[in-house]
Image 1 (cartoon, rainbow, N blue to C red):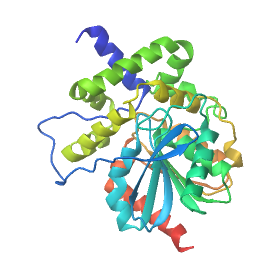
Image 2 (tube, rainbow, N blue to C red):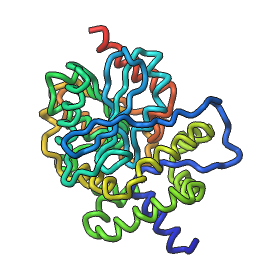
Image 3 (cartoon, rainbow, N blue to C red):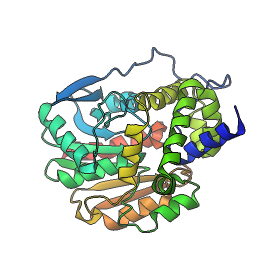
Image 4 (spheres, rainbow, N blue to C red):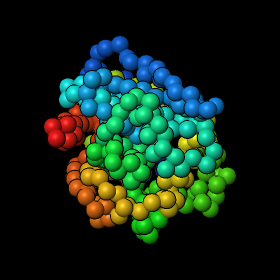
Length: 329
């Protein structure tokens, strides 16, 4: 590969969450089982195809999950076993143009909230919880705002805050070496091409891509991906996110990096915010800002953790125990 291509791939890694793993021979096989293919089920709304997946306890307390970016419904496969242990039913949609869901132009955060409402109605669910990781944080907060009478709680893990209310958000991203928001705004063509190169590398040379990605990760994240089964699922999740191309990924990111159509101060449900202190992809200041603005918010910063918190078994024990408090009430 040329130096230019390496540069573009590296640039793409600054823009998005690295979400694939290499086939390094020294990775350790911790779990030995037939992999879950995560095949979607579909709802057809007008001409739209909406892909969704359920895992965990099918009779358990319902929690709608929002995936990262790049990410997809396959993230539930990381959480399936733990969710079963705690009696939690997890439900996720691929957002438009990502995974197996149809692309929808001009799709915003409140459109996601309306889709959750529609899917909950379809499944006969009245009250439920919300959980989102990374780029799944903003859609979850939008849904908490939009459906205060139905949402019992919201959990944002390594998530973005409202760029319209935190005027230092873009500066914080740049200081972390995360140039996506600036690049998408000032050089949209280059931004798109960088993501196209990243997609090509992910689909055709995942080992090379991950070698660059891991160099950008916190040590805690690198350690998590040393498990071969976990790292291979990470590859599948990233590739599934990009299978349709980059149009859905770009729209999803740019919506989150713009001013949101609601204020954090108007969220009426309890919000639990978790952030790794060593996160190299989302500034810690974002979690602190959310905690200051959301009226009923709790903030937990894990000093030695990175960005990949949902892959940590002990962390998910903590989160699911928190959810169980709501199940008892």
